[in-house]
Length: 110
Image (cartoon, rainbow, N blue to C red; front, side, top):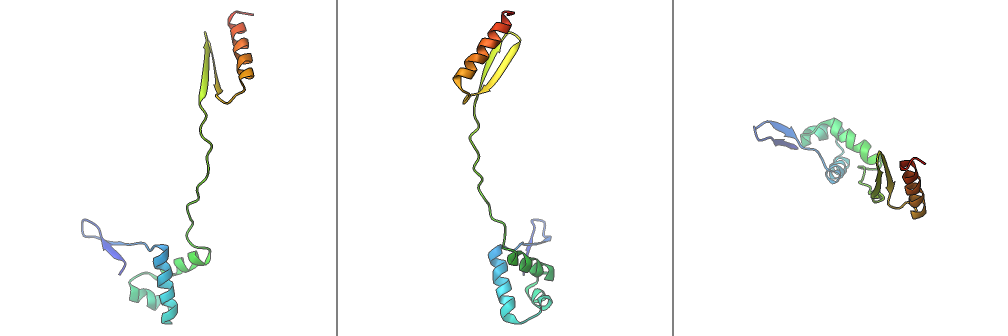
């Protein structure tokens, strides 16, 4: 049986892992039984057997795929009176210098 009990005594269905499903489907194939009869004997629903048959036929359970993510770049904050400029730390220093110069000129009213 694939049933478990919760802490309060209620029955709960336990899900199959992919390897358990593969074993059950191999057993079904060897048994020669219909899906309905096999499911009854195993104490599972026929829908579960059909679900796993389809899922495995489509390529199995989706696997975890690691996706590389670029490290988050820090920001530099330049504050001059009422103006705040935030730039990424990888910005070219010449451009940062030009920005500071423009902010400073505006602060002086030029």
